[in-house]
Length: 429
Image (cartoon, rainbow, N blue to C red):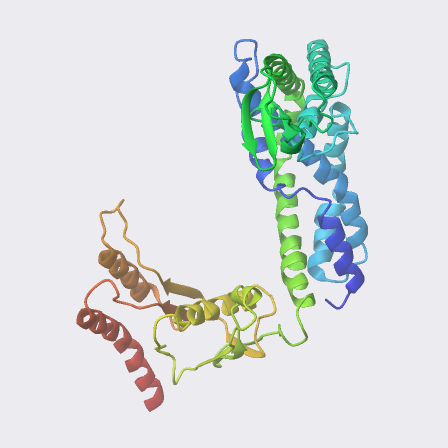
């Protein structure tokens, strides 16, 4: 936060990386069956398309890596300097990027618009590598051009100047006509008429036929592209550990910049403060707030908490909808935020480092283990009682709610006795 140039530089660079960098790694961790003529078919087109998309995403991420290196070059923080040394200065990333550039066209980019993404995937591999792929691409372009020419023909023939030609992956191309342009009834040529808001979505037999040919050509492009990418995928899988490291680094930077630093920078002064830590002192929170709920409601009332060795138990009581569960969750979130290195939503906080956080919230049964709501609650409570230590934080919300009031009170009291005796022994010593 003290280096604004570094903060805004990282914010801008992280936007260059795909949001799905960690997800695409699964496509490089496992090697599928080799693509042969026997397995080439429509069923494999979807898998091939996902694989091509992953390659394009990886290419985009590796091309953004030099920008990250430029931002982190003069970073003084030990963590950021270590990221620069282990990732940005690693020449293997440049080698992977160069290997991808030998096969993938340099102008190919990741796109979210359906037809643009389909076109990018069909033309991902450079021209001239596979003759059958080039033929399938020519067919794809011809059918796409024929569909657009058909739309222009209908605009002139039926006097529909505002006729549009949207595309989605499920239906392909279809016509969208504003209701205001329709005089009475659509011509009989239009089929599958569906009203959608202020527009009418429809198709024709000619468009349906061209859609089938266009989809078949695109699927052929996907499968032939996967055949061309087999050697590249094998080379990438050899360095999959580097890709895992890159994904972890991007997740870490996203957490530090877009979650921690951005949250603090967008709040008023003293809304988030640096917590203090203690080994044997109390857990004290002054004017603590729920970090999620306060962003939704402006009238959130801050709460205090004080727990020490002499008074290590707090019983929260109140009517329904008074915020008891919110208060318990707020304590957990503040402790977690503090121990992962983030500022906390409180005016002042002293956090005693905890080794475990045990929670017993909500009411639900477990059909898989044939456990009722009460049995599930008792199993979880027994686990807490058997594994708790002197440095653990225990949060229980309405213990014994799944049984009668008297039995629930007895269960809650029996769970509290060991901690009350511990308080007494500490106080007497």
